[in-house]
Each structure stands twice: as C-alpha cells, then as structure tokens.
Length: 247
Image (cartoon, rainbow, N blue to C red; front, side):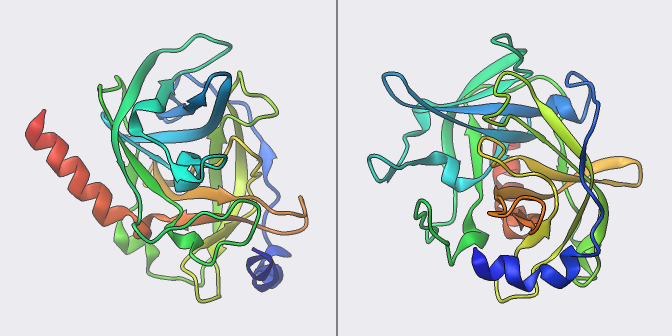
C-alpha cells in the first residue's frame, strides 16, 4: 500500500478536490447501489457496499467476503445484498447464490496486498433486484492510460453513517504507474465504503470504471485505490450471459 501512495504523489498534487454531494438515493444511478451485509455469526456482522451490474449480479471488493477471525472465505448463504437501504428500511433484498473472485487473490488483514488488483468479486444473487443496473465501461474508453479522469462519483455506506448512503463527486482517477494494474483516486475511502463503484458519465450515462478496494492511510494527503473494470469485465460478461440463458 505504501508503494502505491508514493508512486501516485506527483499526480495526486494536481487532482481535483473531491467533495460530498447532494443526491437522491432512490434515483438512478444511486438506486443501483446497495448495502452488502455479511453475517459472520451471532451478533457478528460486517458490511460493505455493492453495485448492481445486472438484475442478479452485484460488484464488490473481494475482501468484503473474507472472515478474518476464521481465516476463510464466507459461504454465499450468509451474504445479503440490500437495495435502497435507509435506517432499517429497504426496497429489495437478496441472498447470494454464489460469487466469483480471482482464485489467486489472498487477503492479509492490515498489511499491504501485493495482488491488490485481484481484490474484486462478482456476486450472483438468488433473486433479481428490480430497477436499472449500471453498466461497465467499454474497453475503448481505456485507450489512454496516462490520462487523469475527472468528475468521478462514488456512493456507498460508510461505518461513520451506516444507516444512510453518502456520495462524493468531483473526484479524479488515474492509472497507477507501478507494475500493478490499479486506479488511484481522490474519492474518500473509509471502512464500509469498500466495494463501491467509481462512476464516470460517458455520453450522458454513468458507467462503472472501477471498484473501491483501499483507502489512504493519510486522509487528504494520498490517493485511495480501486481495481479498474478491465480486471473483471470478461468474467462479468460471462456471468451475465449465463444468467440470461437460465432465467
């Protein structure tokens, strides 16, 4: 993690200032964002954020599915996607039927992850969630890896305000110039917001350009980290195709 912060320093200095924004949580695209609750046992719950990219497919960070006390990946049956969550009420809910993540991704709590680019997961939901999902960015939009991408938005459920969705706008994102395929960005990243999607408006419609996986250890002084859509696009396309033929 420290290396990621250092290599991004020269770009970070010129990035736009992210800020909290007013929004309607029931209006699209925010209606496609939900709270991800993982039940680890009696009175043991961990939560993240997830984004619908299909009626029965949600995107999040893989580490959200790691049971740290037991040192194992959770069973899909304890994973809950809750759409439109607000102070105990919600619009729709589904358990996970299965999930996919990179086989070689290993999570080490509290330490740098050399394979952070594998920190993504696609959750197959048991039941469809009503509403319009978000779409993943087209491959052609990633042609210039050196470009700083501006006007990025991100919304999710932080542990600071777990009962309400919060959102940021005016963020910037850019490719990590190091060996890992990652996006650095200046959107806020605190526990609970992991798994939230970075959104950019393309031709009038928001698209997912990455998924938030790690925050800065020096808030306001160094970038946060996201896995770009290119890392999971093919897997997502295959899962969406399979779901379309079995519904």
